[in-house]
Length: 382
View 1 (cartoon, rainbow, N blue to C red):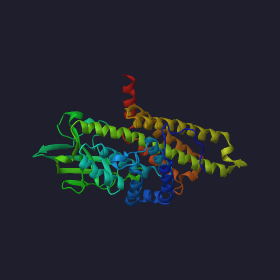
View 2 (cartoon, one colour):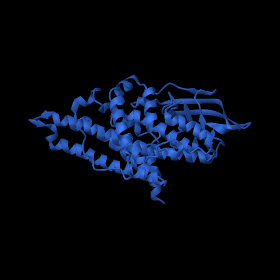
View 3 (cartoon, rainbow, N blue to C red):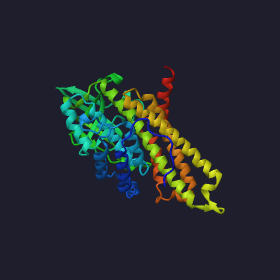
């Protein structure tokens, strides 16, 4: 049984995709998510199936997508993340690469890659962060040196979601050392190209369905056409992708929190203590009420971000607000849900331990909470 929610999308939503996401979660995620987590495994086949159903949602119809609203995508992420936030993260990162591919100026190259990304024939990964460089993306050290109308790429990338099964890598590299954002370009690289090596998957706190690892580039030679975003434009494309990713993280955190509250409320209605169901005790009601308020507020921040993206306006600040608020609300709310269930909340047969660990991982994705505060703080000075 689901709790009642009163917040709702600000833009039209295609319920066909929401229903598909709910069915997909029931059929594929509920029976398998805990097994994937325990095995520290990314479910490649299931991810490709999800991609084929949901990656085209936000892509214009003229480019082979469905042309639906970001609100529709938010609702899809919510339904999937109610069951498993880690798997939803993997899909969302792939979708960021798909959106980036739709913006490639070289139409023949765009169409070649975009069709494969929408169909699930290619899993995409976004390579910006480096082992020693995260928050300050303008300082990346991976270098792309031009030589004979080709680019020689050297460096390392870290925290690469989908890296263990990726077919296409969106790689951001510096072309002019010391030039900051002005020199950063974007390349499409295949992981089987000479000079590219993938490291084993990270053993993380949670969200192993994300398939996170590192990549090393040693004299990887890329044809000039594989630079799909020129110096300067590459950094802008990366930042746009990060902003849309923050919105996606917020949406999936909202879904995870809703799923956790459903689990806790259902349990509290059945569990009795001192002669009545524990949900009848006011102290417990208030804990759940606080988490529910956080969820309603978080959803509205996220839906507002979706509306701004659909309008084609700058979503930087609202995405920061949404991501900052939603990650905290999800982690703290899921902790409350576990507390409501007492010791039973610790058992892996319940989804709360997996989901709470997964929510904690989202604090560090696409900029930490502190980085969101930097973005928001700067906006107050304008």
